[in-house]
Image (tube, rainbow over all chains, first blue to last red; front, side, top):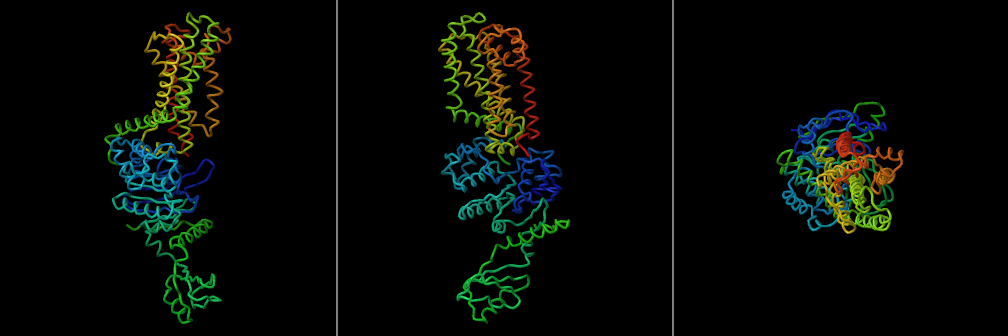
Length: 320
Length: 262
């Protein structure tokens, strides 16, 4: 069963901007799916169409088999949305916001109040249930939107940059919560600019750029396609110039920091062997950027080049 | 989705939730919603009723104070019904929390009906307050209670719809104050609230006949005083016609997503 099925989804705004150029996408039931792309790529437009906040120009959208053109109310009932921008009434209390949202989905008020307690406790907002929403911190507002989206217990939860502007501790607790509800059966689609987040949470991924899907695969397969990685080595003793490491590109950033690029098939053992032979000791090592981030940048850059040449986007099968 | 009996039952819960939210808003900002009409109407009764009214004498066979009381109540109902929906719905658009409703499975006609009923509730609340205030200044009978209630309901419904349609098209706060200031208030003041249209010269009387508020105020006044300057049947045709036509228009605009969907 597909939680979400998009076929040739197209959107041209009144000002002529083609935000989506016929995208096809499948998200399986139970999946934790990342939809990535640079700003203006079409992610929010696609989510807007799925949640009926944006009118599509062409194509079809099915949510758990329910076509939004024929069974809009049923399709909407299946979706919970956590938008990018704060969109609750900032003058209402936390509990009023979540209980009312349940009511809009037809949930009886008594049940809604029980669920409000459950979700507000799980998202550490129960103590603030009587607070006016605008008095909450940024992280609390984000968690409130997640609690609100879950009140009707949707089968598909769509999160549009849910951790933007949230500190690391809160972000990690939100990750744990999202993992938990995914394990319990909720399908999740996540857009984020924190690619570490997507790499940690998501099993499958699509990258959208310029209104087209330029990559669609399992996270494991996508990361395998990474052709090169840059590692940052912290040197114990200062070096005056970059050591010569045969077969590798090495750059001395400062006298204690060396960046080494490894292409696919090369081994870190070779790097360390050569450095050891030269008497250079390494204290610690890390990736220069997150692996997915590196791949993302390469894909988006090559996608732009392909678009300029008029070539078709690259897509491949999604792993279960 | 669990916890939902059927689509109709779910829609009913959704409708009640909109009403709870709208009523909560009216009560939460009572100093903006309930208090000002009470103060304003008291001033109207003191100035136009007690001070000027004594010199005017009788109008249409009634004391001037008795004559203007239904008009002042109806004027308050019109302004508050319109004002409630235009500010609530535009506020929801501006603050983006209208999206809470737009992403929900509630049908558009029910969203319109929910907001409009919220406007009617405020119209009746302030109408009741102004009626109570008027009783401190004059004796007010209820010649035809059904006419009082039905004409107030229909008028409130029509102007709540007006506020809703205005809010759909409005892009900024100027655009929600333009219509009430330059259209609604003049039409209300010229709709026979303070005077009998029979006092007007021929051309002004003919022009007033084109003002729908004249018929609404006329029907409402008939409910209190038992006499009317307008055809009651024609007044109901106008009120029901406007209610049906504007409700249809509001739902069509919602279905098209005018001003709310890209």
